[in-house]
Image (cartoon, rainbow, N blue to C red; front, side):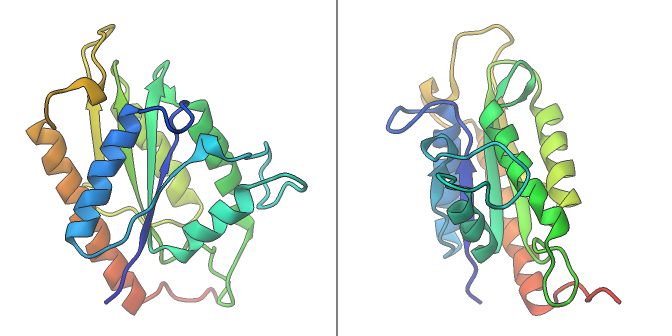
Length: 202
């Protein structure tokens, strides 16, 4: 069975600047590769994503190409840093654009994200990872993505501390374990859904 994934890095930092979110997603990517699954990582801030809640906001909008890559993949991993206890503004822009999936359906009347699996990766130097994960899970599920068991991985440093994830000497064991579970469970559920899609709406 051939599966594919895509990860969106919603850091505020443009390429090629290093980001902690980028490091965590690279570890997710490596774990997918161990399962034989390709998972390119796109840095959303490098694209001109116009504000709006449709799938194409017109001239200059680069969201349509990202949207297509999301729908071409079986698995979507949303990665975001925490800012002021919330997903980054870039992540919120992406979620606003994904909102268009609510009104888009396939030939069976299903939302276009039906049969696709989603997971979340979060980094930050303050409390808030569970809040960010819950927000993203709710939004992604609303538009049709399936959420597997134990499919979030995150790292948060000491509140008001100065250490970033990318500055750690090695990946913490708990983060590595969560990342393995994320990938394994996403691959499992995505594989099942490729063989048995949700029923068409009657």
